[in-house]
Amino acid sequence: MNHRSKEKTLVLIKPDGVQRALIGEIIRRYERTGLKLVGLKFVIPTVEMVEKHYLIDDGWLESVGKKTKASYEKKGQKAPFDDPVEGGKWVLEKLKKFLSAGPVVAMVWQGNEAVGIVRKITGGTEPLSSDVGTIRGDLTLDSYPLADTDNRAVRNLIHASGNSEEAEKEIKIWFKENEIIKYRLVQETILYDVNLDSIKE
Ligand code: CDP
Ligand code: MG
Image 1: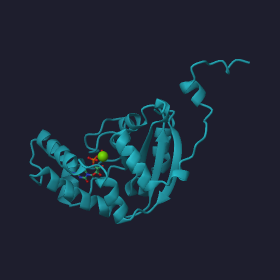
Image 2: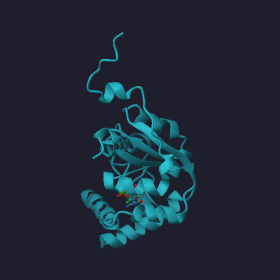
Image 3: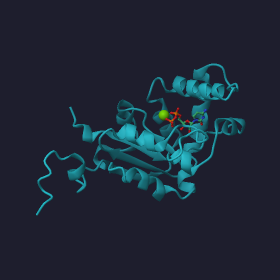
Image 4: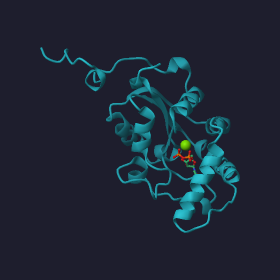
């Protein structure tokens, strides 16, 4: 089994993040946690790539539909669809249009609990209710009702893998094996080494 410090996750800065000139700010937030950047590219995704990316997880269509419904219900409102899977298919169509609309930054971050750390910093899906201090909570303002009324995807700056199995499959869509860089960072000593006997002179 891989050491925990080797967990990887996929992050995409979606077209809104690039257009809002937030690439540097977003990378800074992940970088300062101690996570290591092991893959980085700038691409305009095709519709096929976006579809493959979201359909890689069997349960995604249903879960995205359910999550959206729950958010409407919490506000005392009704979602614009009944069946979660149908809702998920509708969201996928909108995402295909959104993510292929312009360049995105694709990244692989590695470190202890990389998936969970990145999700925490990224914040909840709907910027209206994402926590303060998170990327989605601090840097943008979209909501389900606004996006749904205009029949477009929620613009929330980031995609981040939901769990490590999803991450492994997603990374393969965006990166070839030789595009994941193996290297050491000086700071890994203080983050992970057991015996800190190389600090004192
Ligand atoms: O991105 P995250 O994992 O937080 O959420 P998701 O449930 O996997 O949904 C993927 C993406 O679909 C979101 O980040 C939104 O951009 C988009 N979405 C949407 O446009 N409309 C919805 N009702 C739900 C999600
Ligand atoms: Mg997701």
